[in-house]
Structures are given as C-alpha cells and as structure tokens.
Length: 397
Image (cartoon, rainbow, N blue to C red; front, side, top):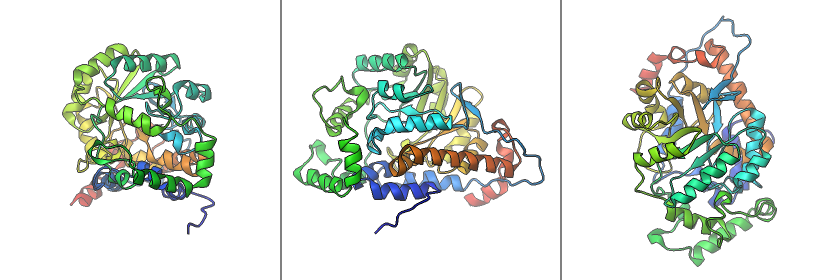
C-alpha cells in the first residue's frame, strides 16, 4: 500500500505519486524505454558522472539564471519537451502544462500528438509556445499544421527526426498497448486496460469523464471518424514516413518562417548536416531512450557535438535531466539549454499545474544554488572551468 507523500521534493517523489495515480499502462508508456531500456538508464546515470568543481569565498550575490532559447527570453535555460498524450496525465494536461511553463517563465512545446489542440493551448497561454512536428506521409497535412501553428503565434518549430518508426517498447506490449504482427487490440488487451482504468477511479473521473474529448486535438480534422486515442494512434503509426531525408528538411525550412530546431541528433556528422540545411538549432536527443536501445547517452555525446558545431548553431540537449544540478552540468558541457519530458509528466500527473509549478521553481532554486557554489553568477559564465576534469576522467576508468 502506498503512503501518501504530502510534500514531494524531488523528481523521484513526483514519479512515485504518478505511479500511484495513473493506470499502469499509461504510467509505463511515459516511464518506459525501448527494448531492455539500457539507454534509458544510461541517460540518467551519465549526468551523475559529470563532477562539478566547488569554489568558495567568491562574490556570488545577485545570481541571475535567465537566458534565451531560440531567441526567446527565459527565466532559466529550460523548456518543456513535446510529450505525446500529455493530456492524459491530468485533465486537459497540455493546458495545465503551458500555464505552469508561463508561470515559470520557460517555453512549452506542444506535441503533434497532444490531446489538446493548438487553439485550446493558445487560449490558455500568456506567452508564445513552441510546436513539435513529425514528418507524416500526408505533406498537405504537414502544411496545414504549420499554418495553424503560425496562426496561433508559434514561432519556434521543433521537428523530431529520429522516428521513422516506433521503437520496440516492451512495457507497452505487456500492458496491451502494443501488439505484435500489426494486429489490432485483442479482447485480452482490452480487458487488461479496462481493469487498469477501473483501478484508478480518481484519474478516470478527472481525465476520462471531465477531461474529454481524448483525441489528438491538432489532428482531429485528419481522422474525423476516430473517437478514441487508440484509433488516432493507429492513424499516426501508419503516417510515420521512413523515406524522409535531408531534402525533406530543406523543404520544411523553406516552408517555416520561424526558428527551426531539429530534435534527435546524436552524431557529429548529422549535427553538421543540420547546419547546412539551415536549422537554427539542434536538440541532442535519443528520444529519451524510447527508440533504439544501446545507443549512447546524450550526456556522453554532447561534448563532441558542441565542439564540432557549437560555434555555428544553438545546441540544446534532453534525456535524463532530473534536477537543477543536471541543467548546470549540461550547460558546463556546452549546451545552450535543456528540455525535459518525463519529469514534467510525472509532476503533472501527481499534482497537476501546481505540482509542475513547484517542481520548476525548485529546479530554478537548485540551479541558482549550484551556480553560487561553483562561483558563477550568470548563465553565460558556466563552462568547462566549472567541471572537475580529473575527477570526471577518473569516473570513466
């Protein structure tokens, strides 16, 4: 039996609360990774290997955590990453999340497969938000989505490039969310999911009953006959396009007038190619360990990519960031900023908008404290000199 956690303080606390409040299949969908989840684990563990250099007796009054990401002013160099089905973490989850992000003074990114549509998020937002896109087979639908995003005030497009097809996610299979051989949901899987929903009546009341309609909001016009997320997911899965190449990125660059960030870069050559296609920034990412298991963690790949491209393009990173200290580590390795996915999903599922606001405020305070104890007062001052290189090298042995 779970004990109620009255005052969650860490990401792990919010994760525990989310596990207790979400149906198992939904929790595992967010929490899990591809195959044996080796890369999922490495993403988190490798940040802990970056050892900081503590300094003392330095004037660290008036520490300022503010920065810019994709030309947008932020109170700290952090953005909420696109998260599919976020509207199922809590009632109209994307709306609650964008409000929390606005309160924290950071960007929110709406996923193509979010539950809430662009117009609903725009109505709730007090600041511009970002929009994330997959290159689906229906290019006219892509054009329409870009037009809608621009009309709602989005000026930064996050284009996910590491998903020609969904990764093998065994937790989803065990929970009846994924089936092998391209078969539809069976009676067994439907029964299992129904049992899991019934085991979380508070979630079912708030999200399913009061939080409908549960569809991929921005794609509702594309699949007018669908009445539930599974039907939309089947359509989206059929739309993943394995033929996408760099020429499609050039086509997209010509269409989109705003900032273009390419999410899913894990290789130096790909990062250099992104520069040549005219991208404004790249996000070093392995899709949170949800696509190809066994690839490198983002922390281990970030330094080489920054060294090869950082002078020519804005480099952001995601994957395994779990604290304000981790934000500092990423900046010290050369990133301009970070994105987070699971942490904001857990906080939202645990305590809604208020929980996410509290988590972000705590991370900003933790980042500020880390800056003070490493002797810096501005984000632009953070770099390799704040790392204990000898200890870091010893940790790799």
